[in-house]
Length: 254
Image (cartoon, rainbow, N blue to C red; front, side, top):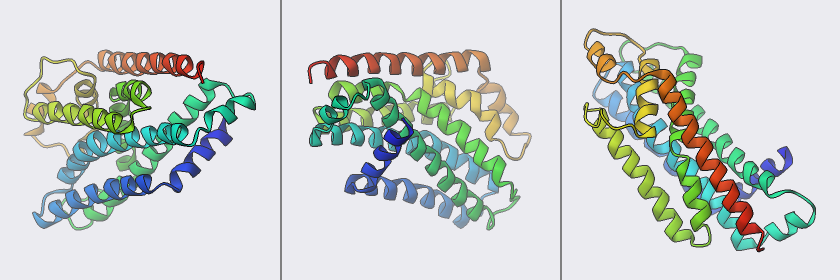
């Protein structure tokens, strides 16, 4: 399965669409970093901005778009028949694509971390703890990906219609982010969407420097950790299980 995952990553390396996604994913944290430097914000603001726009917008967008690209390549090049002939089961193909997309997520987490550390050198109250910063972005990114797992179901359902699938997953990610944006202003607190739970359970982890005015946010955004993890785990597991079942059903007719 490791070899299959490596091959999936090689496919993306040759794609113009993938290179464009890399550019978008790299540029967005750049703007946030430069904005914080220009306005002389403290370091904690940069971390918070990159969590919000990086972990909860760029990461799920890149994850879903890269995954869609992998399935679209399979459809376009008709490679699945050849893979199935040599005895590779469908579930391994499915999981290898998912693993490849997650590898890219980890790489982007590293990029966001690098931007944050580099930008922090020009900001007040800088804390040069690369491992801590990386851990914050990794945990928040993985939680946001779990919350965005229903896009995998959209990809499987619409993978033969690439443009419609791309529009659908982008709409899903943007709607999730709009709800999250409202939550950051203490709205939508009664809603139990996976993305909101992901943000609320990870919010305490993102606090680099505690100040008195943060206590209001901690109290208002509090969400039970066990309930949040259960919601995210159920969302991810159900989405992947249904997607894999549909994928196997579709390939039965290949």
